[in-house]
Length: 81
Image 1 (cartoon, rainbow, N blue to C red):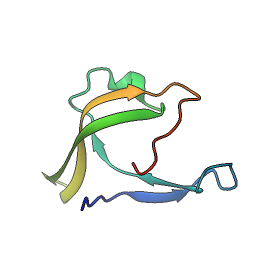
Image 2: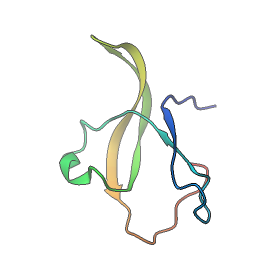
Image 3: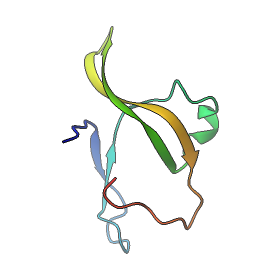
């Protein structure tokens, strides 16, 4: 069973088909060349979950992204992701 860590925030409450919550997860985008162009966009990402030992933060769980693509508006969201 996958284990993820992140931050939960309320957003979009009352919108049709929306639960009202977003789970924010820290991701490592170092393998993506055009990452600056993707900031603020809705993305589809692939990669692996890894434990990373950071000098100032200790061991944290990070999703290491291997590829990212923007989703076009109106494209249906996948359930269960």
